[in-house]
Image (tube, rainbow, N blue to C red; front, top):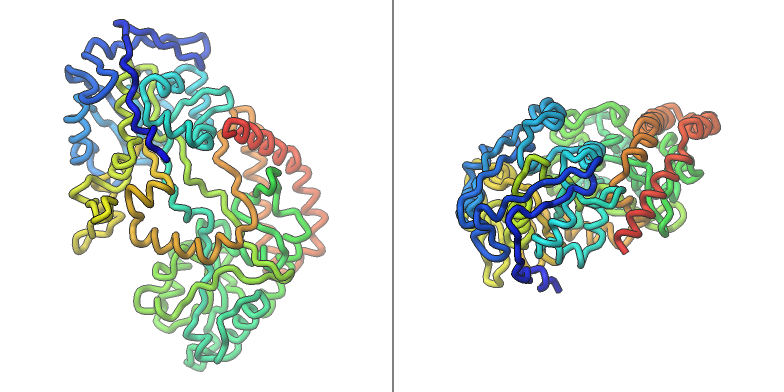
Length: 536
């Protein structure tokens, strides 16, 4: 139950000029809170009796208008009596100006959609540029406080290694990011060749071989591509083939968690076995040679060629790959039974809990009022509107009182509309909220069902959680981690294409050791243990 999210604060006795100390800053910067000068109300609306003006900065989508033009934002001002001068910039422009802004005296009062990396959050928190928020949350954010009490994992995700909270979260728990790489196969070709839907990895390979050899598109040419994928893509990686062929769960970070232990995946015997097997597949002509070099544009074009040529692929959804006209020809394979008889669905580290949605800077003279303003965005219905747009424009209540999508107008996608009317920022929509407050978008609901039915029953590992590394930890892992990921990616491609994993393996393991893979995994383990302790 989440009823205590709606508890109001006991009336507070506020002294004019309440002093708030930014405990996390070097030297202990003090901020004089002047919210009371505007008739600050500890409960209810408006938040202040006299209009209070604040300056906001941060990022916004290139498709978004100035946030002041959004109906929802205008309603926030009417409700709260807090007027905002919005200075949000598109990602590229903001990235160019961000560091100069943070180092100057021209700070906005608030960063909304902050666009800050973890290193930037920790650095600017520790030097006093960003205020620590935990006391403000406890005193002036009953809704968020209630959520964090219920969900210590969210608190852990936004807590820096020094124990302070410098940014507010954005959470959308649809449960669909953990398995982004859906495996599809050309069911029309299977039917043409009299083949059943493959259930095991050996049956799948047999189907790919038939696609190569038996001209299923019927044009008399050997132009079929049995299997295509992309490496290091968000949604086109063959990680589940590695799991099926070698018993090794894998993801883009090559980092998983099992039984509380952080593991590096790309130096195990199971990983080696899988890559060796994929080398045999490549030698047999079953894998698209462009799988290791193509970008998304080239990749997605293969499903829409004039003559059908694509037998099987990994992607987020089939429609985007093959188009509406061929959608009925393809079917989700799901998780294949591996060589050891198990079905292993690799879990990615894609996170549904994000930090950096909002920060209060040292320029802000009204932190109490600002935190009360932010806390409204964590009310479930308001989080839904911040994410998808206002009730009456993009959302409406169904017969059960659940918010559902109003279909977008002809010629406009729901994604485009969302960017026009929804500012984002701090918000939390939990899995429970998606059942009782707001329904997932139709496409998201379809994917939820597929993940639940095809992937979650075979979950092979846990994701590495949204741990906030300290600056010291970031210094230890950032550069070697980049080199390690590059090495793994290059060797995977080389070994599959040249089938040389056996002869190169020992040298590769030595390279990983020289790059400090054991020490880096230890850093991630320490950070994981710290995260788990906060989340207990």
